[in-house]
Image (cartoon, rainbow, N blue to C red):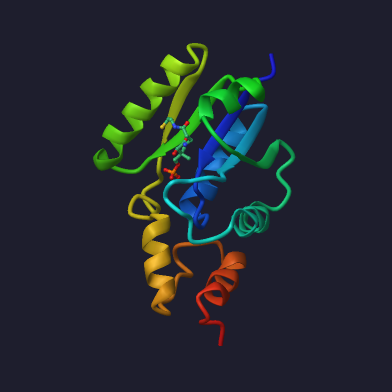
Length: 162
Ligand code: PNS
């Protein structure tokens, strides 16, 4: 049976940690939909198009990975896309409470939906998009945190492209 999973997130911007999770998910499932949340209350730093472009650049062509965007409830989007599960990365214990709450909420909204957690690898444990934004906005070197091909785009966004 074709197993479809959705890896949702803000991806504001994509980090090496996200890419690592997506590549592992692509080995485990038939189809992985990387789904960028459009209308985030968090007011993203990068536009939806910028976030999608950076994901496309970072992932290249992985035959079973689709990059998409969604609005509204994740549980509804999963129904619409006939997804069997949601994938989330877990970095540390601090992620757990929020992730647990989100998984249980999604399960109530869509009882067929499972949430599968993949542990971040040891090199990505500390990584977050917010940390990347902060370092980049102050002109710091983000090459250890994001795929090389998106470094320039992020620097440009913050006007540090010299
Ligand atoms: O990368 P993030 O910001 O941790 O991703 C959070 C995301 C996008 C997965 C979450 O905010 C989400 O699913 N939002 C859609 C709205 C929704 O379904 N809310 C109810 C469950 S939390």
